Every structure is written in C-alpha cells, then in structure tokens.
Image (cartoon, rainbow, N blue to C red; front, side):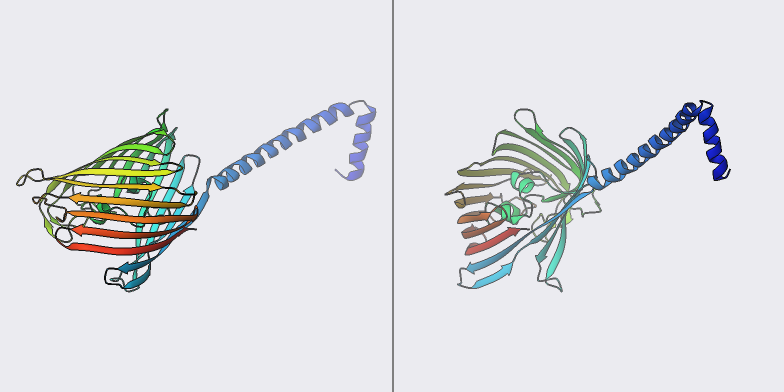
Length: 373
C-alpha cells in the first residue's frame, strides 16, 4: 500500500465513524508490544545488574618491617610477612576468601617463598549459619581464629610460643559448619572435618580425618569465652604436617592426638586481657598418655587512646615421654609498648626473654612497623 492510499483509507475510516475502533485496536497492539519490550529490557537489566552487584571483590594487604637487637649487640633490619588478602561476594549467599603470604626464606633462590594460607568458599545457607570449604585457619584457639596474618592487628609483635613450637595445627583443608552471633549471648560454633596433620593441601594419605569442634560466647562487647577440641591420628614416619607441627624431621610413632583449648579474651576501651591454655595428649600404646600443657597470658592497658603498654607470659611444659612435640620446656616473658597511629598503621617496641631447659636462654629487643593497605 502506497502513502496516498493509506491517507485515503484513514480519511474514509474517520468519516464512517470507525476511527475510534481503529485507534483502540492499534493502540492496544502497540501497548502490548511496548509492555513486552519494557518487561524484557527490565529483566535483562535486573539479571546483569544483579550479577554485577553480586561480584564485589576487594583486595587488601598487610606488611611489616622489623628491627632486631640481639643479645650480642648485633642490629638487623628486615621485612616480615607481606599478606595479600582477597574477598569477593559472588552473590548474596556465596562468597570467597583468599589469603597469600610472601615471606623471606633463605632456602629459596629468590630469598622469598609464596604460601597460600587460606582459600575458602562460603555458602550462607540460612541466617548466620554457613558452610565453608577449602583451606582454613583451624579454629582451635582465639589467636588462630582471629588474627591470621594481618600483623597490624596483633596485640604483640610475635605470635605466642605455642605457635612457634608447632603445638597448634595452624591450617586444615576440609569442610566446616559455622554459626555466628546466635541469640542473646552471641553464641558461635565451628565444626570441621579435614585432612590430618600428616597431609598436604590437596592429598591426605591417612584414612583418618581430623576433627575440630569449637564453641564460644560473647556476652558483652569486647568479651569472649571459648572452648575447642581437636582430634587427629598421626601416622608413624617423618613429620610433614600442615602448619609445621612436630619436632623437626624426627621419625614418629603412630599417635592419637587430642587437644583441648580454653580461652578468655577481653578488649575494652581501657584494658586488654587474653589468656589461652591447651592440654595436649599424644597417645601411643607403648607409652600411654603423656600430658603437655601450654599456655600464655597477655595484658595491656590503653593510655590516651593510642598508646598501649603490655606484657605477655608464655609457659610450655612437656613430659619426657612426649612422642611428638619437641621436648624443651620453655618459659618466656615479653614486655612492650604499642602506638596505634591509626587503625591500619601501628608501631611496637618489645623486649623478649625466653628460658629453654635444653637450649638455654635467649633475649632480644624488637621494633616493628606494621601496616594495612
């Protein structure tokens, strides 16, 4: 139909009084098409926008610079761990956490090693209850479950000796159920099944799995009470554990390991207190149940908001029949002062003294500048 015939048709329709019906039919058709087009466009926008908003990725980092004055008067400057911390929200229920540490290692050809500390996928299946899979920091005590590798948040420069002596299984690769801030007491729980101490990050030659069960409450702001239990079967042979547990490369007999941790933490506006104790039993049929006791107590007092003098006492006691941990009873004391420039920049100065029954005494003065970025 050409343009002239079209105009003629419209004129006749108008004069015959059927223009309104024609207009209504056309407008209805156009309205139907327009509504469908708008709905389709909105659906595409909602889907793409939802995907974009759900993919929120943040990359943060932590680093430290240290200066050490040893008992021989030698001064050493160095860099500690540099931590790359990645989080990503894939949807309103699924998220990812990755933590990779770069640290000095004289055995490496580049003088540095790369260590994947955590890779965790989290699914929030209801409320404050989560399912987590991957490589975790074992939630066996307050320090390991709270501070991880961001040393700017540590109340002291170094971790307690129970970490340095490999008492705590720092990492576990496995599956866990987690609940946080439940009820009036803000009850929390972690239940984890994972590779045992003799396993790597991707393979466990041991048919037995480690089990971690932890609970805590937070009855008021800054206050937390916790209990945790860890169980594993350590096969005989050389130690090659996740987190470095065990006494070096010594050969071990098969042991059933049981760790029981109790902790109390209070970080208020003025006072800071953190105390943890672990009872460790490495059972073997030939030697029975030797008990090891490791503990530390930290206390600090805040002065004028940013300045915190503090002290920490560590105590490690092993029985001579101990088949797995390195037998060297140790008592340590450190005293220091922490100046918080802001939330992500801290300066600390410490005097550290350690008495070892087997290897003698060690003392040093350590200064640290730690940042988050």
